[in-house]
Picture 1 (cartoon, one colour):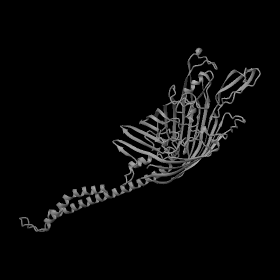
Picture 2 (picture 1 turned 90 degrees about the vertical axis):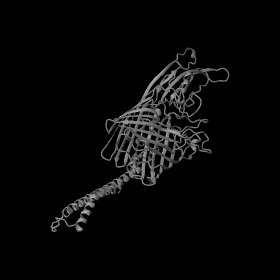
Picture 3 (picture 1 turned 180 degrees about the vertical axis):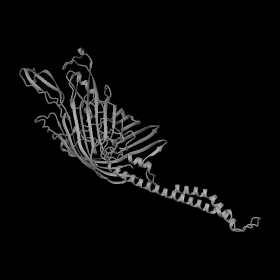
Length: 627
């Protein structure tokens, strides 16, 4: 209307002199003129009368022009209104199809420009890319909450959600709302007979995404934090003072085909939904409410630098160097003697905050070099059916100081100090296919030699220590197959089946010991003691004299052979308002199980360990997303 009023006012001002002239000449015609020498020709028409029709014609033309412009403005208003309605419908569709409405903001300029999936991760956020774009395009209504603000030329998008989670497990795991799949209890333990139920707001999240343009370059920053940080043992007793922790903090630079990202991000080993984007909404880490996600998922959040090339809109190729962490958790038994020092040269994943050695968690281990990851992705598919494939390769190295030449030699005076360095790696692949509209199939696979730590939350080992002090990689693999179905703009249902496998790697030491007896020993035994990952008790044979030989132990039920988890769930958006956010009810139903390599035999002193340890889990989550 303001445009129309301005045009009309301009035309009126332009026409005023003409109208004024017309009025003046008309007055001369109607008023008797003074007698002149030429007034003797009363029947001769004056010049004014001959010009009046031309003036009227010009005025009429101006009026026609104004009317045409008014009609054109009305048509443009109608077209704009239709466009706003289409954008509102698109916003409603995108907002309803994404189960993560906050942590996965819209595809950043760094993302490969392909179709955004209708369903994104639950533990991380909706891909509100479309929301942010529409907020900039459409005029803000009075008292409507803005989705972003600007400081200079930079745009800032607040993100986050308030999360209240209830989890029930049939067997106590003792790891909070995130499941430790490696610690599922056996039936011969107290935890194997006690269920647990807890509420927590720890998964609530706050964050900020920024975007700015510098010439032809796009720069995106991303910060995300939750409250699942380290807490004192009695935190749940009274204050429940959950600790803030950094999840993501990175900056991405893209210019043309080239992209570079630095900071703490999801590892490039994490499966993607779109291209090689680091945005949470473009990654696949399940729709699970469980903050440790789906068993068998390969992921990490760690510091690194990556470089990505986008040859076209369908392909992306990336190289990443990321923080390493050589890991040999409690399932790995290290030989005795000087080799025990290896416990301080790898992350034992014990959770201990103090001490050093095999019984503590040494987070500052001396890694040889960063993990190197290469990854390629393709996005395409038929119209309205998004298809994504990616394949990744991993290269790692492990190094440790070797103080021994043979075991069980404990005489360090004749030992030559040396180092042992080995290399490992793995390969991973992802398929994310929209089979029919809003129904998507997801499949991931991972195989490695020395990449166990990337099968997160399973305490998978990277390597073992042999009796001669050298290192040996442990082979491992995992996979996920499932679906996600956007039933309607408010409802998402999903289901997955996943598993993880860790191969045994066992070495033995043979030694001669005396037979146990009171007083003087009466014989000797030849003992074979096992070390490494996935072994049972050793053996003992009477070599000389008489007596009884005790069979060496040392095995552990933490050396898992196979683990699996079927999962299903529903996410339902109960309420949504572009000005105030949305409220969602999210559920997850899972059964998790693990089977160790060795199961001990029953005895009076030690009840039998069942072949598997398992638990049933129900998660119910109420989440309010920021607009």
